[in-house]
Every structure is written in C-alpha cells, then in structure tokens.
Image 1 (cartoon, rainbow, N blue to C red):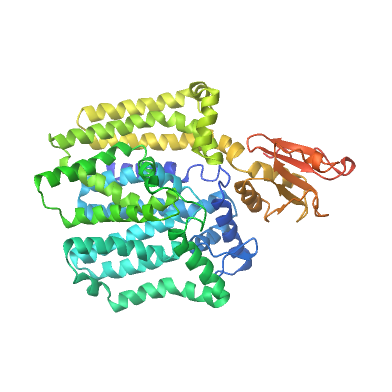
Image 2 (cartoon, rainbow, N blue to C red; image 1 turned 60 degrees about the vertical axis):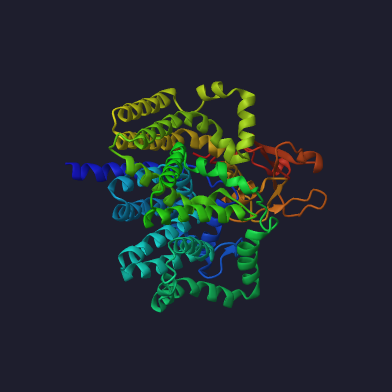
Length: 553
C-alpha cells in the first residue's frame, strides 16, 4: 500500500506546485509575452533557426525555449502551453536531483534537498514562468551532477552526459553555461590540486558530442544573419551584459543578491544558517572537508560572486545556484539528523522558523498582484496607504483557508517538537503547496486585473479592429508587449499631432485625456487596475458601444 501511496502523494504535490492553475494568469511582465510571441512566430513561419519578434529577427536568447514552446503551441497557443516547458523541467529535475543526491550524499540529504528545492518560491516562481531560466538552471545542474559520476566513480558515461547536457544548456542561455561550469570546476580542481583532471576532461569524443549538440544552431544562425547576429547576441547580450550597465538597463549594486538569495529560498530562508554554521564549526575544529562538500561550496559561492560582479543583475540569474544550495543545506541537516547534537537542535529550530514563515503568506497574497504590476516598493506603498490588516481580512482568499494553513504550521511544529524533523519539514512543504493552490484559485483574478492586459485585449478584440487600427499612448512596456501577444501584432505608438489615418482605437494611460488631444475621441472602457483607458477615434454613429460577446466569459 505504501508503495502506491507515496508516488500518488508526490504526484499530487508536483501537480499542486507546478501545474495547477498554470494558465489562469495572463502573461506577466515584458519577457513572458515576448518569448511566447517568438515561439509562436517560429511555429507560424516554420523558421527554427532565426528567432523573430513581430516579424523582425531577434537575437536576445538562444532557441531551446522557443523550440519547446512552439512544439507545445501545437496543442494550442495559450498561457498554459507557453509555461509548460518550464513547469515540466522543474518537476522532472526534482526526480533527477533525488537520484543524484541519494547516490552521493545519502537518503536523508536527498529527501531534504528535494523537498526544500521543490517548495522554494524561486523554484516555483520560475517553474511557472514562460522563460528560459528554468531550462538553463536544470540542464546546467544536471550536467554538473552527471560529471560527478566520472569524477568520483570513474564512469565514462558521466563525462559524456556532462558534455551532452552542457550543450543543451548552451542552447538554453548561451555561452554562459560553459562559463559557469568552468568557474565551478576550476575552483573545485584548484582546491583539490588535482590539475591532472583537466586534460582528462578534454576527452575528444566527449567534447565533439558537446559541439555536435551546441554549435549547429549558432553556425546556421550566423549563416542566415551574418554580423548582426554576432553583434546582438554575443557582444550585446553576453559580453556587454556583464561589463556595461547600459547594455540592457538592469544595473544593480554589488550587494543586490544578498537579500535576493534568502527571498528566493522562502519559506526555507532560515535554513541558510545551517551550512554557514556547519562550515564555521568544522573550520574551528579543523575537520577535513570531503570532495562532496568542497564541490557544493564552490558550486554555490563562485556563481554567486560571478553574478554579483556583473554590471546587470536580475533575480533569475541566481536560479542555477538553488539546487546546490539546497543540497548544501540538506547535507548539513543529514550530519546531525536523528542525533542529540547541538546541530540537530539548530536544524529543528530553522525548520520550525521556516514553517512559521508560512504565516507571512497572507501578506504575500496581498502584495503579489501589485508587485507583479509595479514592483515590490509600489505594492508596499499601496498596502500601507489602505491598511495592511484590513486588506488581508477583506482579500480574495477566504479566512478559513488561512486557518487551514495555520493548522498545517501547528502540526509541523508539533512534529518538530517530538523530534520528527523530516516529517515536520514535509508538512511544511505541503503547506507551501496549499498556498500555491490558494494563490492560483483566489489571487489569480486579481493578478489578471492588475498585472496583465489579457482582459484589455479581449475588450479590444470585441470591437473587431483591423490590423493597424490600434495604437498606444504612454503605456508601460509590459502592457505594450502584452497587447502585442494577445492581439497578435505590436501596436504602433500614437502621435496625436500627426496621427496615422488608419488609427481607430487608442489604448492610453488612464490619466491622459485623449479627447482633449483629439477632438471627437470617445472613451470606451476604463481599466483602473491596469491604469489604462481605451478610446476610439471613430464617430459615435459608426461605433457599436455594446459589442456582442462582451464581457468575455
């Protein structure tokens, strides 16, 4: 019975974390609609070499996400299929990670690492996003994991698997895959002073396997597009992104990732103390580090420093660090598990603190929609202005659902008090899954109202504008790209003093009076959540003010 129950339980947990409600929220931000649009363009044009955005060659990212998403789009072009490659990669990787960690770090570390990784906000968030970050993180981590079969057991299959998956990672996000893997391995080899590993790693058939997987697309894309591909992809989006703050417009201070890392680990952020405490304790006692622990230290620390030194920083850059970081945490847990050592009490305390952190999720549910729309600072300002507690009480999530979460937290704490550390942690993990279900069920309509333009696009479509009849005026780029995806074409910018004669509809910022700039314009719809108003330039006599099929179901 247990043999059937556990797989069913893990399947339900995986579904709740990564698949449930995956298509309920419209595409968010500037990246999701653009990446999905490129994949749709591949499917439509049949050109799987040169990515196109709105009909123009677009070389920002390699093609792996676009290939997989265009394949999914054969089932239908929608938010679910756009996000499915990331969700499947996140879920399948957990199974691989359990196999790898159990082989080299033991059963306890494997269970803790997979539980923590699967239920961190960073892994869940990017696992539910239409982006290439999850594909990159999973293939790179799997490549380094397979390499240990060769490093520690001498299995040639591990070396070939490493180069094969490194080639796939290079198709996910470019030469950064080779750079990160190289940084980690050089740090590990230098620490161990095993320089003879390097020439052995450069095994010609294995390197040729990497080249056969990674290079054909780069060669063909250059053959089709020439110098613009080199300048845009390699120089701007790989080299300048690292060394020039002006390259992509995301400059951040050196310490940017110090708060981002614990935020990405939520609710398990307190457990960051475990590997640090363990490392200090071992150094103080003069204990010898094992190869397994040395690899984890460099696998986490060197990419963290690498990205901290980069001029441009985005939260998703840290995603490849999460698998080894959760394993480092789990390895520290396993050393004290089922003992009465001080380390075990520290473990229980940090797991308990993590469970208590789940009680912060009502605040997260309140802030999330506005944070997706205008950033965390804007969400906090708005929440303070209206009263945080009052907004939580009248929020979309029923209070009984939060009470159920509190019961799960209490149950987790009881198990921890009784010394059942792993069971208490698993109950906390199910608490995370419960929160995801609450967010996708109750909060997703609020996100759609505030942070996406799906409803706006449905309203515009109900008037049946011809191509070129919609223009935008002072909209945020997130809204422009979102309209571009949902209306299947990027709307032009409206110039009120030199308007295009084809423009019949204008989507403008809500506080702009288009009728003062263009006499005869009429307001059709106000979307206060998005801060947007839809106008028509048609005379009233030519306008059906109550179009059929509105509001959309």
